[in-house]
Amino acid sequence: MPRNHPGEVEHFAFFSMHLGGRFQSAGLRVQFHYNQVPGIHFKVEPPAEYAEAILNGLQNGLACDFPEFPLTASVWINEVIVHDVASSEAAFYRAGLLVIRQALALVEIAESGSLLSVQR
Image 1 (cartoon, rainbow, N blue to C red):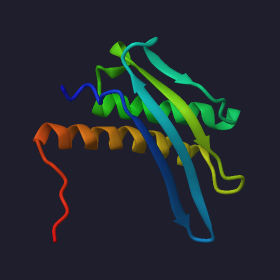
Image 2: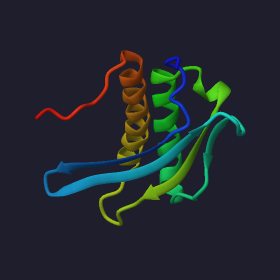
Image 3: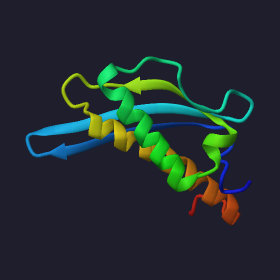
């Protein structure tokens, strides 16, 4: 599979970071598709204050790791995990980057021919 395509997979990313007296956190579940309308789409509505950060994180992640992906396929955001206190725009931006980086990691494993095995 060429590096510009992560395959038809679903990824879940949860980001949480301790910031002294509080946390910053956000979570996203996304699916990658090749037989649907190209672009990034919300299946669930995120809180309005986080939508732009989610899109920016996903777009920047795709531009860096899969530069041709937005032209040929789609990303569907199926779940948005919000914490009433700890969620923020910065956390959702990072969760968007993280979910794309997870997809890249799986592509790199597949391209290397590596198989995960249990050592005894």
